[in-house]
Image (cartoon, rainbow, N blue to C red; front, top):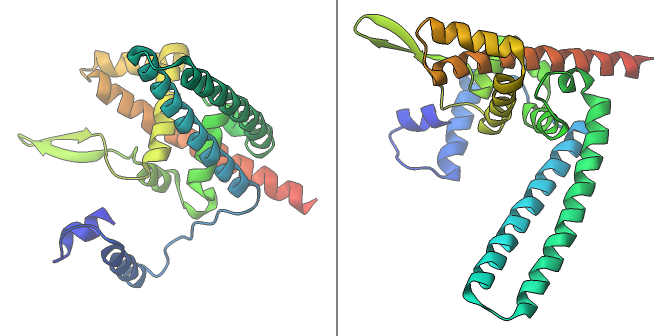
Length: 233
């Protein structure tokens, strides 16, 4: 809704402003695809969100522990924080195993993408909320923020990174891109070609992320087709 807010006469961000912008968009675009998140994908999303909450809580406890040790506070508080941190680690690891088991069933094609681990695949599944609602790989790239934005300078067309789109999905693709840039020969060759043609490191990474968006889209479509055929039989 950022573009709608920018074009509105009212300034700021609030639920009423966003609700009005959504209503106007729905009237203007009657055939907007619906995001549906139910069944196993919804379970994956909830588990991933819960795990991330626990990781954040553990991080806060570790920060408190370091502060107490630095400040010389009594050892009892430090021991309590260590015990609670250990319990959170057990829960986090259990959730990761549960998420991995679900994702292996739901998205084997996605897991086959180099650099896409179970947690990243789970994040992609949950944030995509149904790949069937995207009519093409280009629409999916626009949604996840990897579609390049054209800019003009001195009568020369260039492209820059997009700051729009689903940032959680974009971050997941970014993690895959960084892994491939270090370990995947085809990705390394792509980056080398782009840099040889004058692109900087960020521009080469942008191109790689855009290519990865198409790879992920096709993998999601393949997994969705497999799931449909399995349900039919």
